[in-house]
Length: 537
Image (tube, rainbow, N blue to C red):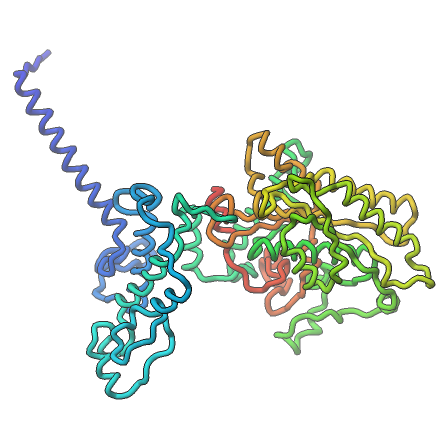
C-alpha cells in the first residue's frame, strides 16, 4: 500500500483552487439565470438567430422582429419589472413600501396629463392616449416622418415609443399588490395564476366547444369536478368518489353567477310543474337536426314541438315566483330579478341580526305568509296575479360590507319543511325552493382545513344547498375575474340554457359531450379555469 504525504501548505493550495472553481461556476450560473430573465428586443427566447422547428431541432435565421412582436416583448419586460428581477425579489419585497400605492391625480389632471391633444409635429404621440390624430397635411406628415417617434417609411409609431406609452398605464395605475393596498374586495395577485393566464392568452381561444379548446374544456371540467367533490360530496361517500354528478362553470363575475342561479332555479320550478317544455333534449341526440339543414346558421328556436298537451299548458298561467334575500345580500340579486322580469315586490328582503346574519325566523314567517296565499290557487274566484309562490332563497357566505355568514343549514331546513308540507297537503303543483349560496367574497374558505374556520363560516353546510359560487380573485388572489359556479343537480345548467345551435353543438361530432357552451348563457367564454387550476395544482 502507498501512502501519500502532503506538506500542510499543499492543503491550503488545494482549498484555494476548489474555492476559485466554485466561485467561477457561481458567476456563470448567475449570469445564465439573469439572461433567462432578460426580455430585451434583441434577444429572442431561442437565441439571437435560432428558430424552433417543432421537432426539437433549431435552425439559424437572421430575421428581425417586426414592430408588433417588439411591442409584445417590451410588454413582457414591463411585467418583469413589476413582478421580478434577476435578484429573484418581487416588487412586494425589498423597497416596495417606499413607493406609494398610487400616484394619485384628480380626474381633471389625469385627463390633462394622459389625454393631451396631439401636437402638429407629433412630438407627444408617445405621451398621450388620445386616439384622434392631428390634421394630416403634407407639412405635418413631413414633420412626423423626421421625428424619433414615427417610423420614416410607414409613419407608424415606433415600437419603443409605444412601449413607453404602455409604461404609463403601469405608472399611474393603482398597485394592487402593494402591502398597503386595502380594498373591500380583492388584493394581491398570485404570480402562478398570472403565468397560467398569460399562456392562455397566447393561445387566444374560446371555451365553448371541444374542437376549439380541447385542453381548456377538459381542464375546466376537471376543476369543476374537484370543486363539486369538495363542496357537495363527503369523503366516506359510497360508490365512485371520483365522479361529481352535478354541473359547474366558470362565470364572468359573481353577479352573473347569482343571475345564473336564479335563472336555473326558475327554469327548474317551471319544468317540475309543467309550465315549461324546455329540456336537455334540445341540442342532444333526441332532436332531429335533419330538419334544420336548410338553415345551418340559425339557432334552434323554442318551437321544436307543439302538442295538444303543450297547448293546454300554455293556457295555464304560472303563479308569480318569489325570491328571498337578506338585507346584507349583494345588490346583484335585485338586478337579476329585473333581468328575469320579476316584479319588485317579488324579491322579498329579509332582515338580519345585528351581526349581519339572515334572521331565519323572519324567513320562515314570510314563507308561511305566501303559503297562506297559495291555499286558494286554482280557484276561479281568485286572480292568478295575487298568488305568489317561493322558488329561490339566497344565502350569503361573507357579505361585502360586514363579512357575515348566514346559517345555511337552518335556512335549508325552513325551505325543505315548506316543500314537505306541500306533499302532505296534496298541493296541485310541486313545491321547490332553490337554495343558492353566494360566497363570492367569503366562499374561498371552502379550502380551509381549520375546524374553527369551517364552523364559523358554515362551509360544511353548503353541501345541503342547490348551488354555490365563489370568487378566487378575491380571497385567493387569482387574476380578475375568476368566478366558479357549481350546481348539485345533473343537467340543471344545460336544461336552462341549451339552445342546440347545430353549427356549434351538433351532437354527431366527435367530443360533443364535452362542449361547455350550451351550459352557459354566453357563447364566447374565457379560459378562466386555468387560473384556478394553476393555483390548485
